[in-house]
Image (cartoon, rainbow, N blue to C red; front, side):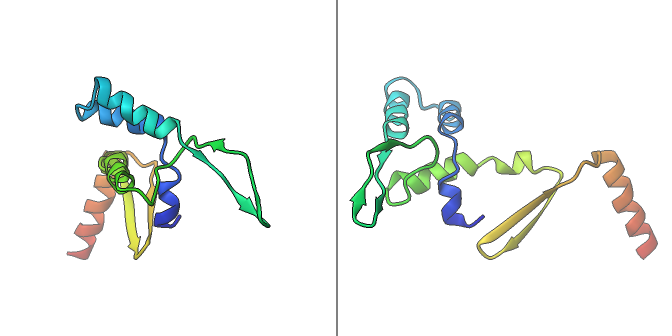
Length: 117
């Protein structure tokens, strides 16, 4: 998934929960709720405009808040990827999760080190 596409996949509910955990509450949280949930988009195809449709996920890429909200949303991604391998291929970062328990993986890595010595 490209970086630009990631902006479109952000869950509004998850983002609002994270904002709450960072101390955004009351009127400010209500403002962000309105900002995220009251957005609509229009599509133009062959010169014809669609009706405005609500947007249920994502943050606006062309706004000042969009990149900030994106960073807040992904700030703790490392916690979910604790036992994953991450490869950064310029704009295409991939993560591979393993089902191996931490102890088994630790033993496998140590055995590999012992064989190398």
